[in-house]
Length: 120
Image (tube, rainbow, N blue to C red; front, side, top):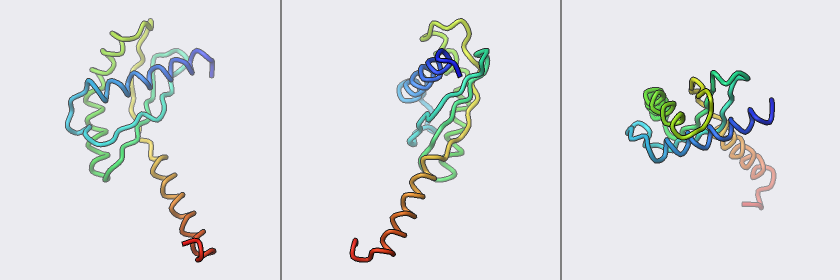
C-alpha cells in the first residue's frame, strides 16, 4: 500500500467519524459508533469502511442500516470537505474486533485468577 493511499485512508476515517458525530442526525446511530479502519482501492473508486458498534445485536443492525442510509450524504459531504479528484464509493462493514479483544481480555483475567487465587 502506498504512502498516498495510507494518507487518504486516514483522512477518510477522520472525516467520516467527524460527520457521524456532528452532522448525521439519525436516531439509529445514537449508540457508540467508531470508524476503526478505511481501505481504499488503488484507483480510489471504492472505499471499505469498517465500523464498530457497541451495544446489543439489534443496536448493531440498526446502526448499520442507519449508516447505509446516510451513505450518499456522507459521500456528498466528503466531496465538499476534501480536495480529492474522486470521492470513493463507500461500502460499510461491521468490525467486531474491539468486542473480541475485550472478551479475550476477560478470559485471560479469569484464567489468571484461577491460577493465582491470592490475586483477588
